[in-house]
Image (cartoon, rainbow, N blue to C red; front, side, top):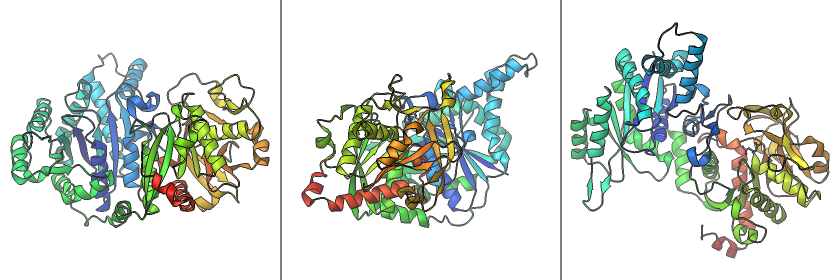
Length: 547
Ligand code: GLN
């Protein structure tokens, strides 16, 4: 029978519930249990696809084309298994379903209410993955913080499930133990309050994971256990870590997995086998090289906007035993005049995905710089589209070249909207989404990097390379190295006579995991290392000044 672990958060947001949930899942997986993680988000949007990065950070896309919360990215990166639409549910989705059922007349004249109709639908979805019989343990992360008005139906649903399932269901509560510098003391009161708040709703945590800057000494753990009604082994210290990838090891030291399994009445399985994970950590912590990669985007000031790209660079860096320092370069402020000053000290250039025209001219300038100076270049989605525009404008002599997204009236639309997209009026969930096949050209750099010709990658966009211009590009050495075999859409572009110049219409970053770093990112970091070696020593000295 599938067991359920719910992860809630208290005191404040941003404590890292997703990382704790993923770390616990990793440890259970390493003990031989099958496990998955799902996230329930309490906002009214049906999915985060319509939220901009200022609101919600990156939108993560799964194989089946679900636009989801970025925590699903952590789940996949840690577990090395796929998630799907079923792994991310929002209040909007729950209400949409219940309201549609009401319109169908399914409630037979009843008043439709938060309790029981909304909570029943929450419970049904919480059990959905468990009922597939594929998993020994389903971990459910509840978005938001206990005490939020919008979280209440979720807390109530978990209360009911705990009542129904007994010891097959436990709650892990992530909380903060702040350190007051002036008093030189760790404070437990906010945690006590947050547990009390939960208990007012009939729910009490079985395990407390305590985020802290300072180690929790024994007496403090005792005090927390006493005031919060948990056993002392269930007070887990979660010290701030240098890297999110250290957290599973920290949680193993604190026996979070053992405590949870014991409380669920499960056998402990084998000792967790984290050999590959630790190999990765060693490479991450003791790099032999260091490169600087310029990340060109309009959201670089937000730490979550390009989450999967940053993580993929970390995976690829470790694979190359190289520390990747990302230099954030705001595309809006990058111009032809300052391109040299801003880009001369980076070893490689990555142009980020995006929507809308803000910052696109800066992206084009960065790509021109990379092409002309033979700096390794990697363009993702909008980054690839801007590479096509840059090449058309500056090499193919098409001054008006653009994407019809930014300039709907251009007569040189080298990037244009797919026919199938032209009739679409609704914004939510209507892009080209999820996994699509791609066939690589035999002699392409991509085929060599992937080590084969047939791949699948995840997409999230509306615009495409316009095949009317394909021959002109190809003749000039700019080749469609990968195409969709069913639709003939260009998925990868490459430039000949360049050390590394690859643009991809898809998002390879979504598929990079700790155990399977993405080959394109690995090759890109490798190209950055080579590029650095070829530079004068004085140049690499300049790299130390990071912006
Ligand atoms: N805005 C572009 C499109 O819709 C690129 C999207 C992206 O970078 N994800 O095609």
